[in-house]
Image (cartoon, rainbow, N blue to C red; front, side, top):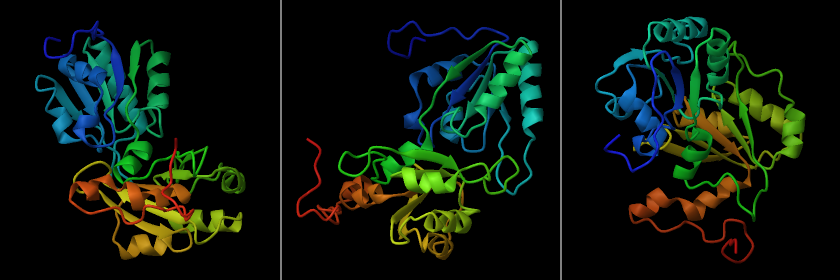
Length: 280
C-alpha cells in the first residue's frame, strides 16, 4: 500500500470475507483499514447507504449491490449471506461493505456468524456509526459532562419491520438520559407515546437528522410531544437518526457547520445556568 502511511497493513487473502464499516456517509470518515481493504478486494458487496465516492477507491473490483431499504424490494438477508459464501469459495477476496459500523444495527453479526458456520475466514473492520457521527455533524454531542453521563442506542423496528416489541421502553425512559434511535421514523408516533407514557416530559428536546454527514444533511429540533408531526411537516425521509434528551440543546452553541457559514451560536447558555456550559 504505497499510497498509505507506513504501517504493517493486513494482507487480504483469497477466500476471505472482510466485513467493513463504510461510515455514515461522508467518504472522509472512512478508516484507513477500510481503504486498505478497498484497494485489495476482488469484489465489493455493498449496501444502499455506501457513498459512491467510497466505491471509487476500488476501481479494479467487481461491485455487487446488496442494498436493503425499508418498504422497497430488497435482497433477502439469507441470499446475501449465501452470495458471500459462494464468492469466497470461488477464491475471491470479498469485501462486505456496510454503512456505518457493521456490528451496530447493521446485521453484520448475523452475516459473520453465517460465514464462520460455513468455514469462511473473516476479518471485521469497524466503522463510525451514524448515531454518533450524524449527531456530531449536527452539533450534538451524545455525551456531555454537564448534561448526561449515559447514552442508549436502540432500533425503532425489528426484523419484521414492526416496532421493536422486545425493548423495555419503560426501563429505557427511566434509565436513559439520552436516547439515540436508529430506523425509528416509521414508528416515531408510537415510540414517542411509549416514552411519554413512561414518564418522559413531552417538552423534552428531540433532534431528527437525515442524510447524516453529507452536504444535504438536514436536522430539525423539536420536542418529544410533537416530533412525529413535525417530522411529517418537514417532509423528512428515512434513514434518520433521532436523538431524545437535553444533549440536543447543545446544538444551540455547537452547530459548527452553520458557524462555518458565518452564523454565530444561537445561545451560549443552552442549559439555562446563567453561564456558558463548560467542561474543564
